[in-house]
Amino acid sequence: MFRIANPEYLYALLIIPALMFFFWYARRQRKKALALFGQKEILSVLMPNVSAGRPVLKFIVLMLALACIIIGIARPQFGSKLKTEKRKGIELMIALDVSNSMMAEDIQPSRLERAKRAISQLVDKLSSDKIGLIVFAGDAYTQLPITADYVSAKLFLNAISTQMVPTQGTAIGAAINLGMKSFNPQFAGSKAMIIITDGENHEDDAIGAATAAAEQGITIYTIGMGSPQGGPIPEFSGGQKTYRKDKSGNTIVTKLDEQMLQKIAEAGKGAYIRANNAQVGLNNLLNEVDKMEKSDLETQIYADYDDKFQYFIGLGLFLILLDFLILERKNKYLKNFKLFGERK
Image (cartoon, rainbow, N blue to C red; front, side):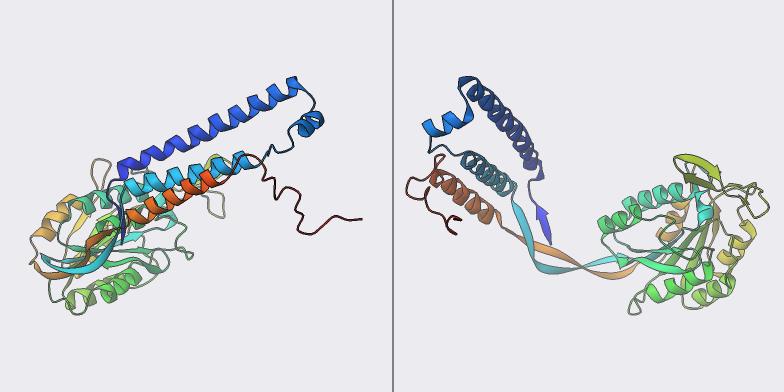
């Protein structure tokens, strides 16, 4: 596990682009001055040992040395030991609908974007529970296995889009079945699954899957994204925004199926909450989750970080020494040496 102990020092790396600009500007001004002084062919005869490339090479070596020293000062570290921590919590799996209907804007800025923001806020409030992510449309896929790494959870969450699942549709049952397999079978504590969708399930038996999950001790909660009145599905082409139409040319309106989601939550012995523009409802569900019985969770984290700054500082000092050894002028002993000779 890699980390930077003092990342604020890395801002000093911004000095390097500034120095590169000044070096380029100075070289340009020097060329102009030499052009005014005399012709290039004459000057090359008068100054045979002057090298055009060596000052550039020396500058590159010096900038690399500066970068290494700055990184060294920032103290790069590697975790050398895994430590097991015991916490009290539950396992929580969130299944997020990424079908095209989730792009509808009856909830601003869109159903999917609002759901992602709410999940991110939920992750911020977790402290000892484990969380996982599933995305589904016409099929379901594990986006993030059950973990206590909340940073990774937010990174994977940010990457979620409607292009992640090639098969369109809304297979809620497939998401529940995959969630059942994703929980740790050795964990005997409370397990919960939150389904965030518009509820337009046309693919499978979601109610049967929720019933099976409840029999295994997994509580199913559902959050309805959208409104009963529904909204059109936006499409973007060439920078222009249009709305999806059916074969007859009529604009498709996707509506929230509350009845379906209520039945799924009832079968899963959980609860249904409808989202709106004011709130998604995850806070209310988090209160319900907090009431669930907490059990011991074992989490492995990296501990005892080892400093590796000495390698970067050492490399920087070596590059500085190399810069001193590289002369700006041509070596008089090697200037006439030609490795492959001259053509006759």
